[in-house]
Image (tube, rainbow, N blue to C red; front, side, top):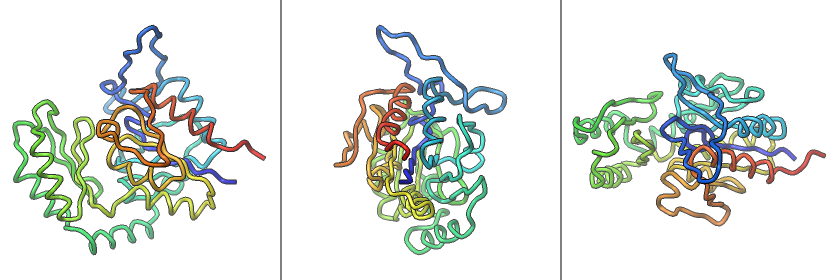
Length: 270
């Protein structure tokens, strides 16, 4: 029985130095493996134990990295084990097959966005008009699909985020705040739709998923079973679902626990 595992990457399986959260009383800090280097500097990590678990998971399941990262950002990550046959990038906007974006899938996604939500240019103009340069460090457009801001989190007004979320919802978009990045993403642009497509292609009869942010909620609910760590947007709001397990672990050790849960939920071969 094919098992499909669709997991978010950042702050779910891999962690920046700022997100590691290695405060673990009465325990030694785990040994880390760097899985991403950018501009000559180490950027993302997982534990060495998690690396071994991930390699095993790749051998036993159809493991699908599932991320809001652009294709270029995803390709910077070198995950342990054999390269994943499928990967979901740009929050479902690109479905990679052996590293190449599936043109038919991308065309279907963009056609749906054009029909169901406000155009990207309108949303980006609203962000530029309402965000304060005092706490915005960067404005970015990702894959001509969605926009995000890099902000000074301590200076970011909570009321502005709430007002933006309401405005975005009225225009068919979703807002998600993850670390120092604030995303504005079209509502129909989902990881769950891409996961279902991979399940269809592979004949997977069991789907497992994990994620920490609002942009992962649809993915977790679409899977047969889902896990979220003890940090992130979903944990902060107490988000839950009938097939969702909320884990207590925070930081890089949560990634290790999630991989163990995936393996426990995977039926033995044969």
